[in-house]
Amino acid sequence: MKRFFIILLILNFSCQIIDRPEKAPSFIKIDDFQFSISNNNQGTSSEKITDAWIYVNGNLEGAYELPATIPLHYEGVKDLSIYPGIKRNGISADRKKYPFYRQFDTTINLISDSILTLQPTTEYDEQLFFWIEDFEDPQHKFETHTTSQVDINIIESPLNELFEGDAGIITMDSADYYCEFRTNELDFNSFPKNLNIPAYIEMNYANNYPFTIGILHKDASVPSYQKFPLITLVPTYENEVSWNKTYLYIPDATNFFTSATEFDLFISATNENSVNDIKILLDNFKVIFRQ
Image 1 (spheres, rainbow, N blue to C red):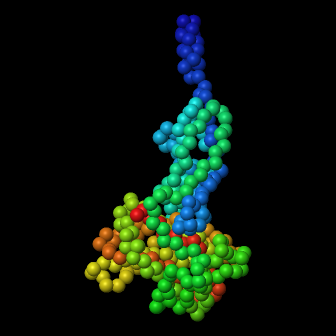
Image 2: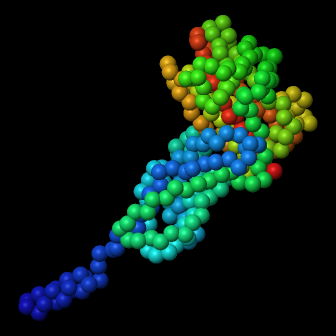
Image 3: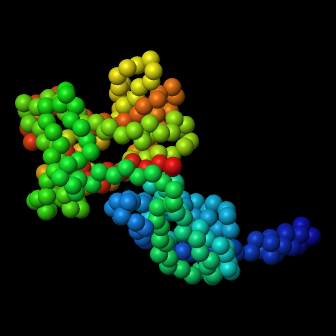
């Protein structure tokens, strides 16, 4: 019995030597990304970067919703890359690195149990195509379809309802059943049809009634445009105007139409219940893809 007790003591002592406490991780703290545009052809500097994708020495450490204090099990000088992340199509379960924002690269000295605060910056990547409607000119680029009972108008007041400068507005009352507006852009015929090749719509919007954004498509066998809804956006407010921004993934629709030779976009709303005082506000509408 005594010999067995001694063996147990030896084993216990050995485990204490082997199972040493792990060192505390190093931490980086990121509140948000600072985004800027590099030229006026890129439109507004509005963004909705929600996440940071963290790479240390080229290894993915995780994606974190901002603001965040992020543990890293490294010490010493390391290469750090931080990629801006978004909620694609506004869906929390579909978080992606935004392919048109540049990553933030730096070298940091990580110290165990210490917090290093970072302010990552980003801007648009090079060689991108931009189509922009910011509603700052007297005429906008959307065409009212023949089936539409209302138009898009441009407003410059009241200021408490605007986002940045002027905005486009769609209003409907109980007598207006349907509205539809379309683009007419040859450049959109270059939309990628491969689900893995990115193309996005960025826009700011405020609405008290659902509206739809979709793809128009046609090919040699179909003489007129066919409509395919991309997303229906739920209201952002009931009483006081509240703005949101979204990133809509165009190939979610175009990948179904590999034979299409022409593409455009449409915006529509159907007032099925004869609702009064419908208001849909739009600003900083961008279409972006690689040239």
